[in-house]
Length: 191
Image (cartoon, rainbow, N blue to C red):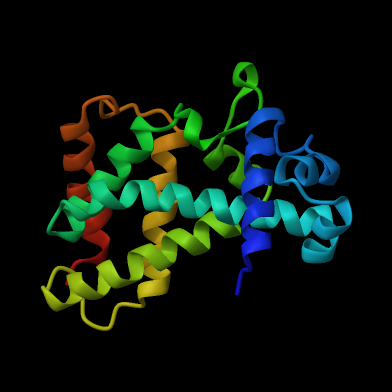
């Protein structure tokens, strides 16, 4: 359970990381931004690595929460995953999900892939599990599908929309992305 002080520290750390980068902020920077002593920051997080993990979890949660509105507008799993792919591609350069100096942005997905992918992976797999359960009830995916495994497969597929160009679809054409996802990515989960 996260305390109010820990939330304050993580919020300050996210602001520091957004300003100077994940690799360059210090515990002293975070303490000053939170209006706390350095000792308090260390008492709650122990070391910088644990604080970095908390920052990544916080940013991953923000990213997943930001995509939720768009994804939940769709009624089918194919539509939901397609909308998530559109969201990822549209927000690749979004400053809300960048870490560091505006001149040398590191997108959240790139940072997580290069440093610690687990926070985003955990948050987003958990996001997809109930959507997969609902899709199973509607008969869109095969019965008994391992939702955790399928959720990770969806997330891994979605990340490619942020980090890889396409040679067969126009990633800037939202409908082309939705059609591609519905036709190819979701088919592997079908009954």
